Each structure stands twice: as structure tokens, then as C-alpha cells.
Length: 494
Image (cartoon, one colour):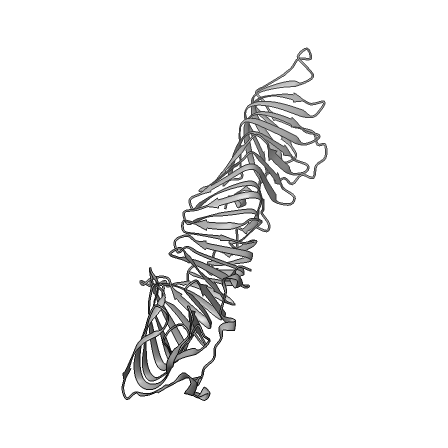
């Protein structure tokens, strides 16, 4: 970093005091009282005061008041500290204040500062410029309108239009300070750090140039070509690629039309994983309709292998809402490449008037919405009809097919069971089908009524008139209607 190169600016071993300026050499000395109470020094002029040496082409030496006015090729140096050049100098030996102007250059051996006017206080060990300055150190270049260096505290302070360029990034800030002991740069006011990967903005932050650890706050965000992260504050550990965000997190992915909010986030750059906790909510656009996801923890993972598969994972107390589907489960995995959604551990999925459960549920979507749904082990579909009766389908493996997100067909493979209330019209029932069959296929009409049932593998079916149907048979084993926990949109907008 450029800051470390500026360390020795203004260093001196002097403790102040009113030591006299000495003339060490000059080709010509002229004193003319008619011109003024000063000596004119010309050619190879050299002055000394304490550890400071100053060369110039010519000078006016006001010995009585201990001052110098120097001209042309001025060169000031302090032992083991800095070298300073300029075209004009005003120096007060009593106050130790130097004002150097005209093509001013200062260097400590590795860093070079150029400015139009530089002031340096040798007693308080403070140097500053107010008319603009440029600093170069290797590949780093910094310029600002104002700059100050406090030697005692080892603190640099750059103010007004601070601009830093580096092969990897550029930085623009209102105010920037750097401490050479702690190796910490601090940003004050609006600051932008731009690289090929992203733009970082904050109104306050700091960067440890030695440990490569940074912190950003007050309106902080990181914006890339396809994403933007906002938070109350952020930490980033460049060496390990680990980042953290705290408070009011808002992560937006414009490519996937995805927004995630929460209170804490962590990022693993090399593993390409982002974790969000603290009541996180994800909202994704599906063809103009929003998919809402809430859980204790959200994990956005990008596969670093050749497949480049990206998934969004949710853990504990998963709640999902979309206009054509709602769900709860202990965990969930969403695949960005094909929009497949997997629900795991006690999942429940609702579609229209249907409730679907199983040990695992996979949901497949296309551009028209729900396409197919599969349950693995203990599959159970319940449909509550308009009159409050529960149509039920149960089996080892259930596959449900949808057209325009409406259930059209159900296929049951293994230990199939069904209770179906056959409606003749909106209020009249033909009776109740009680079916036990290894496999079955049910076709459903646009009114959510079963139109046909195909029984495979030794079906056992009994048709009861509604009034004769035993109440004890109205619920298949494992029946549980959980509509009370069905997610609603308002739950995600709190």
C-alpha cells in the first residue's frame, strides 16, 4: 500500500528550540544595508540548523531574525528521514516553519510527493499541503486536495477529493487517514473502491494493510455486475476470502432475480458459498410471480467443479409461499439450473385445495408453473372438497402431474389406498369409494374431482352410499390435516 511508503515524511531528531541557522558555504556573500538587513548568498549555497541541511542557488539570509528566503534548486534533507526539493522557500528558524513552493518534491527513498506548496512544522513534526498533492509509490498513486502528516502519532490525513489508483483497484474518498504503526487506513465520508469484480461503497470504514482485513459501515454495499450486498457493516479477510455482514442485510442477484434479507451473513470467496441467518427471507421472481422462502438459515452454494451447479439451501423451520404452491419442512434445496425444489424431513406441500406429505418431496417446475411432484415413502395426498369432506390418496411413492399448476393426474406405486367422495353435482354425492390397491392412477378434472381411477395389481374396492359410509373409515392411517400452519403471503412481508 502507498501509505507505508510515506512513513518517514517529516521525521526529525530535533526537540525544537531556537538554534541559529548557519551558513556552511556560498560562492558569494553580499551585504548591502540599503537593500535590507539581510545577506545575499549566491552559488552553491548551503545552510544548516540542527540536523537539517539546505542547499539552493541563491538566498537572502536574515541572520538577525533567523530566517531564510531561498531561490532555485532548493534541496532540504534531514538525517535518515526525507529529502525535499522546490523552487522557492520561506523558512523561519525560530518557529521552525518551512514553506516550500514551485515544483515541490518530497521523497523518503521509495515514495515521492509532488505539490505546488508544502508547509512543514519541524517542532510539532507536522507537514501539510492545501493546493493539491500527488503521491507515487511503486504501482500506487494517490492524489488529494489537502494532505497532512503527523509525525508524532505516525498519522497521515488526506482530505478533499482523495483518489488512489492501483493495478487492482481505484479508490475515491472524501477523507482518508493512515497510521503507520497500526497499519490501518480509515475512510471518512463517502468512499468508493472499484475493481474489475465489484464496487465497494461506505461512509466509514478501515483497512489493515498488513493483515489485509477491512471493515465497512454507514450505508455500506458491495456491488458486482450481477449482484449487490447491503448491510449496516461488513468485514472482509482478504487472505482467506472470508467475509461477514451484520444488520439489515439485503443481497440482490439481478441475474436470478433473487433477493435475500437477514441480520447476519458470511461469505466464503473460494468455496463460493453465502450463509444468511437472523430471520432470513428469500424472494425470487418466477415469471412475474414471487416465490417467498423463510427459514432459520439460508445457504447459497455454487459448485466449484466443472458442473457449476448452484443451489439455495434452507435449514430448520422452512416456510415457502407462492401463489400456486405453499410448503413447510425442516430443510429445502432449490436448484437454480432447472428450478427443482426438494423438501426434506416432515415436508408438507399445498397446491390449491390439496395437501401433500411424505418423507421427501421433490417439486419440478417449468415456465407454466408446477409441472410434477413426487413423494418418497409414506406419500399422502389429501384434498378437502367444497363440502368439507376429505378425499385421500396414500402410497409408498406418489407422483402428481400438473397442467398450468392445477393437479391433473396422480400415480401411486406401492401399497396404494384411496378414500374418494364421488360428487354428482355441487352438493349431491353418488357415494364413497374405499380402495386398496398396489398401484393406481387417478385422473382429475378441472373442478378437482376424480374423473377416472385405474386400479392395478389386485384391487380391493368397496363403494358405499354416503349415508352408509362408516365414520371409522373416513380417515386413512396417518391422516393429519395441517391447514392451520399453511404459509400465507403476509407471513413473509412482516
